[in-house]
Structure formats: C-alpha cells, structure tokens
Image 1 (cartoon, rainbow, N blue to C red):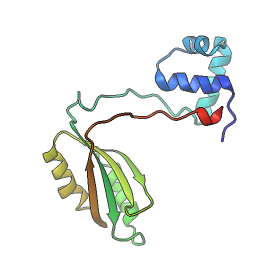
Image 2 (image 1 turned 90 degrees about the vertical axis):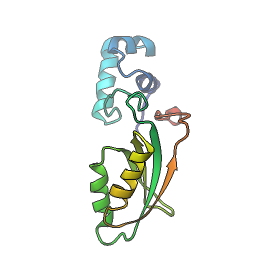
Image 3 (image 1 turned 90 degrees about the horizontal axis):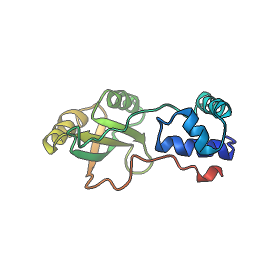
Length: 157
C-alpha cells in the first residue's frame, strides 16, 4: 500500500469529485502552494495512483435505458474458454465492465442497451452463442442508487 500524506489524500479526494480542477485551485483547496502541489500531482500520476481523467456520461440521456448485470458460467476452464470469452467481451461495446468472480458464476458483466429487445438480442444472439458459455443469469437494474463509485480513501488516513 502506498504511503500517502494528508495533502495527497486530500488531493485524491478533491480530484475524484472534480477532475477538471486547475492545479492552482487544487493547491489552494488542500493547503499547499502551486509548485509542491503540481509535483505531488505528477508523482501520483507517475506511481499509477491517478490513472487518468474522463467525462462521466449519462446513459439515459444517450438512450441507454436498460442497465443489467449478467452473470456468466463457462462449461470449462481448461480448454481456452476463459481467454476466448474475455477477448470477445472486450470487443462488445454494450459491456461497460467485466469481472472474474468466485462462486457459482465465472464472470460478472455490466451491460447497457437501449431497450429490452436489444437486451434479448445481445443475450440470445451474441452472449449465449460465444464458445464455452454454459449459462447466463441476468439481473435488471431498477434504479442506480449510488455510482459510478469513487475509490474509498479513509483506510489511508
């Protein structure tokens, strides 16, 4: 675990809320002058703690009204199926996130599509037809209460 001081932790907290904040504003908010703040910012990027900055888009405003989590179980883990599945999922624009899991299913996918018909087409004609897929379990999101999430920082203090 990295050894971060209180300034760096506050910097990360501020940047998670507003990644477009200018270094001079960031410095003022965390109680440093601009040059040391800029040095710490660059060091956090260099260490891979700050991975980048991106716009947060509204899926609904973009017409993606159906959000689902899909659990996928493979037939086998010894025939190259996991690698093949991962490569296929990485090419699927509808899949915003994918995790390998412990338990009854091997993968958890976060998927966004315009309609239930599009979800049906995605699951039945693309996902289920991938080599090695044994079964899928789909859970429709009714309401997103919190997220996309921030990275908790309290354990660093």
